[in-house]
Length: 227
Image 1 (cartoon, rainbow, N blue to C red):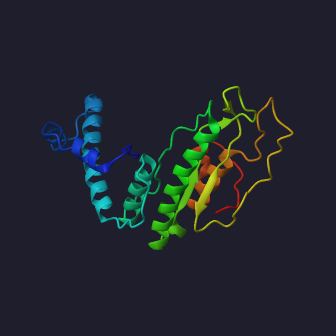
Image 2 (cartoon, rainbow, N blue to C red):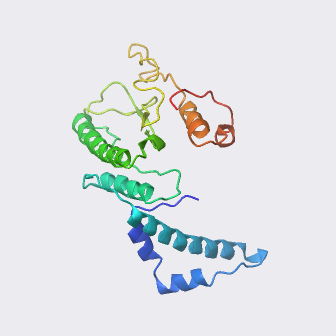
Image 3 (spheres, rainbow, N blue to C red):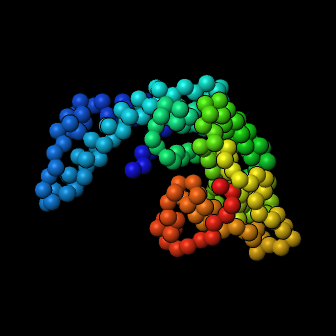
């Protein structure tokens, strides 16, 4: 089950409320006519247990790299602490907002990519020093692409194709994995993608996570050879 939290300590504080603790500790299975109550009790109990687990693993982490003191850097440090602390979590998801650059794109992109690269550099150093980089795969993606042509506000509007960046110690191929985009051949001003993003997901699901990608994606997609 997925847990969404920006800070394990704050999550733990939320579960120390006396009333919530009593409800969680008094959880017992109810009959089928109280399924909703049963679900809420169980979720609360599991959240309390998860908070304790995250705190324990984060404390056990031996993160030594110096991370940037911005929100994204702190997120990456938290992930490193959990990994190095022995957490059994397989997938971590963090986000860096601000790339919806409809105006003043150049300065904003430069700043955000600096934030991203500094945090990822610290994270990679941490895991390399601990001998765990070969067991790690970092995938960076965006939820939308950008148009090619700059708009009147020195930014770009929503487009189609985008870039996926992969980092880790066990990549079989390095560099650009697909043929370069042809800027002279566009689809109504949009880039024409060369790789279906679901091929990337299918590859990671099958070759990295050991999962049947068809079950997740709903149909078969050809895999790539980066892992």
